[in-house]
Length: 188
Length: 135
Image (cartoon, rainbow over all chains, first blue to last red; front, side, top):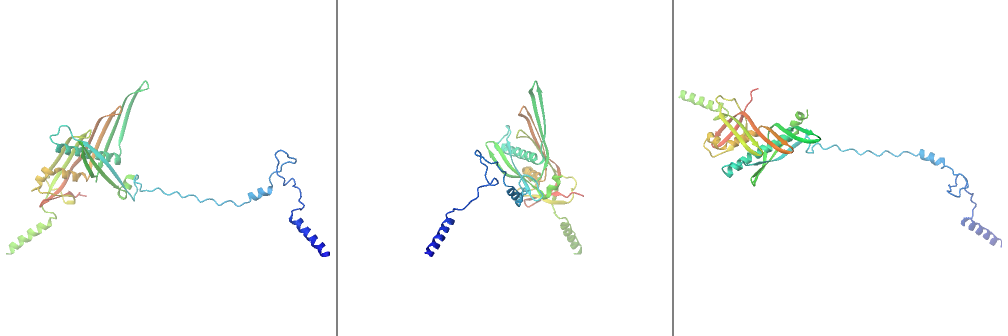
């Protein structure tokens, strides 16, 4: 009989403890969350401990800056000491009207094409002087004149390819500027 | 016998003392005018130098031809020499005028100033050399 009573008491205690029938204290003002409407107690600001904890949290390590890659000096557009620049142009020429034979026409067209190629190379390498004049009267352009001029000395230009078609001679010309030789002279 | 040997030695030494025997000196100049992509005028002057030009420098170009001598080569293939010399440098002068966005004038001059060259013609091979500049 005593054993039964003892086991019954133990079983009841176990059931009580497992069933969650424990005494919980009501939420206090410090822990009760703010209620938007049925607010019976004033809202409390967030616990300062958390703020303190957040403030004292170790700062994140700064992200390593992405290293900007240096621009490739040999981009084919700018002259650098260690690279070469290639200029390639296509000169065009036509034969004069008063030629005596097709061969002469072709020969003269070739001269004109080479001259045009040299002019284009000079424009690219040495630059162009440009002078413009506009006359404006009563808010209207009356006259507009543009003069361009090129003066240069071109060396080591090569005729890469030629083509004669429909009376038009095309000469592809190329020039190479070696950076090791010309950078210091041209950069200054 | 001794006299002949001396003459031969003299000839031999004279032959090998000049580094490039049979060279002739010439002055070359060139001018080309084009307007609106068409040739207007072209002038090539090749004249033999009346006084020696100095020592021969580096070779500029080499041609092979079946023509008998350099005078004939000049007559028919002068443009080869001009093209060769243009690689050594050509003056480019150009202007262009446009009125109301329409090109009215356009001209290009190519100029080779008078330059001295040394030419060797041996067995159909023409070698053009520049003249060493005196410093």
